[in-house]
Amino acid sequence: MIKVFDTLTEEKREFKPLEDKTVRMYVCGPTVYDHAHIGHARSAVVFDVIRRWLEYKGYKVIYVRNYTDVDDKIIKRSKEEGIPWYEVAEKYIKSYEEDMRALNVKEPTYKPRVTEHIREIIEMIDGLIDKGYAYEADGDVYFSVEKFPEYGKLSKRKIDELIAGARIEPGEKKRNPLDFALWKKSKEGEPGWESPWGIGRPGWHIECSAMSMKYLGETMDIHGGGLDLIFPHHENEIAQSEAYTGKTFVRYWIHNGFVMVNKEKMSKSLGNFFTIKDILKEFSPDVLRLFLISTHYRSPIDFSFERLKEAERSLSRLLNFIESRKIIEELPTLEEKGEELSIESFRLEFESAMDDDFNTAKALGVLFELVKSANLLKDRAIKENKIAVSEKRALLEAIDFVENILKFLGFKLEREKEKGMEDELIKLLIEVRGELRKRKAFDLADLIRDRLKELGIILEDLPSGTIYKRG
Image (cartoon, rainbow, N blue to C red; front, side, top):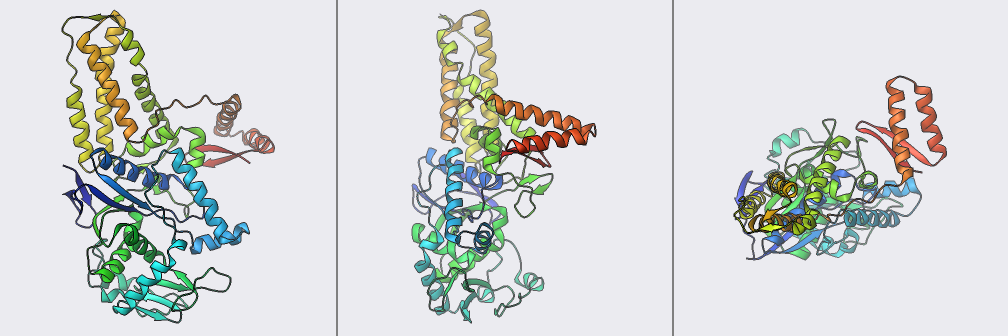
């Protein structure tokens, strides 16, 4: 039995989808105006693992992850880069999909884009106006929060308290500070589509409601995303969706915790983020995946290069164990009773951890305990150059289990290719420069940085260490 922590009820509940063996699942995808960072990677990997585990348990998962491909940030980036907004969106969708392939994240069943679902969005807004939940104001359309008494039920916020801290921005024509935009009138030079209210574009929140309903129906089983989406995004999704249909919008809300850097949330606005591409220059995708699921998905995860190196060492232990298959197979066997190694008990413990709100941290701990026990048996047998038939069978079964379960969880289990001499020399120079800076020999440290820059190697000093990019 799978138990899921539901953000709405704030408790673990037995997972029962609407349809016996089919799970309808929607995860908020990126707004595509820049390269994806480790925060995006965590959400993508967490929900990839949840999806994979549900499939492992025999469910068919209809998985939807959207792209917000028109937005204020995209318009701003188009001006900065001097290219049309739709080219910005296309550029960063391609970048994001490269990252997802590198991380071995399974393709969603559907990948809807906002710009391809304008008709569905307009229909839903029109319906909300007809039902009295929304109103038009000079080309903009707003959702009237006071018309939805349950507003705040997901984030546990009270409307009165929210109103006290809200204000109407200059130029906005909404009636209540909490009312949120369903449709935004396009300004001159901005993208827009014909609508009953004039040329405009969708508000952020309505997009996910309209697209999820098209592919998953009016009620879905799981809606996922980061903790930062609980309010206002998911709160607003509930209000507009349930006002529109009169039905429960989502049965289980799942939210992953933040990635932290020096006790602050990793984000582009704080400038403390690392792109997936930057990290994959230094570490294999499997290392990053292991790092991201070594902490329970609801807990914050502290990012540092040292923790990535720890994950690299842990992955190496798993690979070493899997690769010991040939040695074990070639050991001389004895027809005698050997040590007991119950793979089934480890399997049950692993599945129990995963069934308990997808506790990957505990489940991985079970795998490492199995590897530890198996290695003691394996090392003794190698030393004695003999092994009991039952022990050999148990060790090979353990290897099969570890290998198969890791592949099911999305690991490629490939050794990282040897880094070239050039990369090793750059790393060495970065270490030397670090030592020079500690000794306050800043002139020599700056010389290394400047000479590398001349060679097209850009150094970036970040809170967690120095990284390099090819210019």
